[in-house]
Length: 180
Image 1 (cartoon, one colour):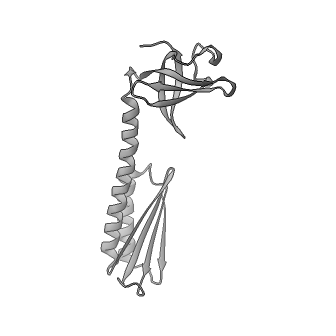
Image 2: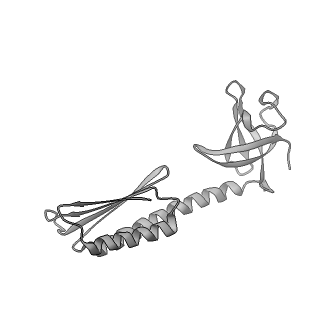
Image 3: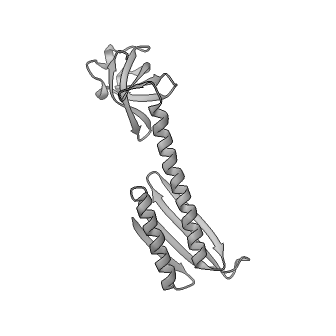
């Protein structure tokens, strides 16, 4: 994880740096593969009606950015609170990813295989869509077809397939005609 620390209208104190390093180490332990970059900004804010300081954390994660902002009169407690909130937001992101994987695994799955029906075929562009029993829409490309050509498929055909999360949603890694 790349870490960048910025100070505005003040100098970073050693105790703040140590707290940031400690909190960063916690993030690495729990979310090493999730957080790509982390920027910590501490700004003196004497002009704000709250006075004191503003602490901002901006974490870059795959396909998203998480930002936390806290104001107060003492930096160290603000750092703790901001990192706690960031940790909770990251935990929620991980939970959503796991729930999404669980949802797609809850379809008619047998030994890692799912069953469904061809909903739509676009043979000219070499792709189509499968709908599972629990109404999940799964993209497939002609390259994922096993023992059948895309021209031999028809809407309504029963198929077995395996799926994964793709860049734009669920996609079949392989597709065979037939049922479980």
